[in-house]
Image (tube, rainbow, N blue to C red; front, side, top):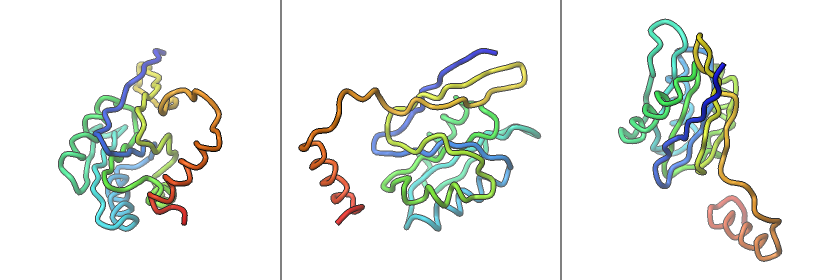
Length: 160
């Protein structure tokens, strides 16, 4: 077994959801989940098929985001993994619905941070072991940091 890391290409201003599922119908169901969870979402989905023709399946509402999703999925080449790249919306708006999708087995991360995916590769193929989401913390928040966090949540509309 060989361990590898792949840094995902996340376009400026976008968020991603990276997960694992189990069936070719994943692309259709994740598409439906996104369009019913978020008003007028801009997104691209790609799914690495693990058997049969073993293609990267894709869909979405934005051609550029679909292309980014395809490129990331191909770089990962991990069986039954999926990536959703979204713009002008946040994972929090669709995450519970995505986790409830019958094909979804696991969500590794939902983030706008730089992401490195830790992969194991064997003769059979690749699997995702985990993710490195963002950077190391450099301290403990103080009172001013708490104030800024709360202001940010209000600016995003998540707190009053």
